[in-house]
Structures are given as C-alpha cells and as structure tokens.
Image 1 (cartoon, rainbow, N blue to C red):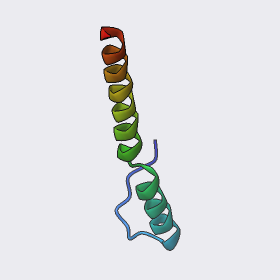
Image 2 (image 1 turned 45 degrees about the horizontal axis):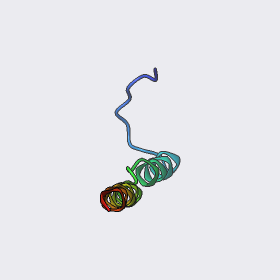
Image 3 (image 1 turned 45 degrees about the vertical axis):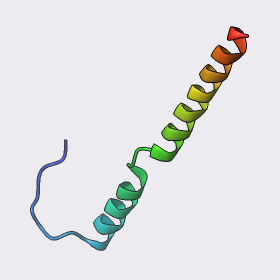
Length: 51
C-alpha cells in the first residue's frame, strides 16, 4: 500500500485519475439491454408454451 501524501497532483496523476474515472463506470446501458432481452425471451417463451 502506498503512503498517503497530501501534496498537489502532478500532471501524470491528473491524467491517470481522468483515465480511471472514465474506465470505472458500470455499463448501465448494456445491463439494461441484457435484462430487456431476457425479459422479452421469457415472455415470448411463456406465451408460445401457453398455446
């Protein structure tokens, strides 16, 4: 574990933080689409098996 230092950030640190901020987000769009497709497939399967 790195030691905590409370000095001002260097340009390299700022670039690293910006990169990590862009990278560390949950893919909500993909999660929503997968859930929607699974729901539609389940609903279609139930409707087809009912008839």
